[in-house]
Length: 42
Image (cartoon, rainbow, N blue to C red):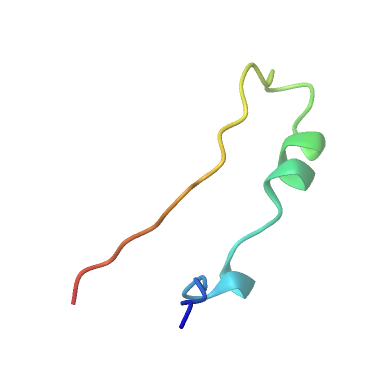
């Protein structure tokens, strides 16, 4: 059986690309990182 990874509360986060577009005169994107795994202990 495979496990599906889910975000804890996906609706709590804004789209980072949209945020950066809105701030384009304040920031310069030099690198993009993609999360691989988010582990939270119980």
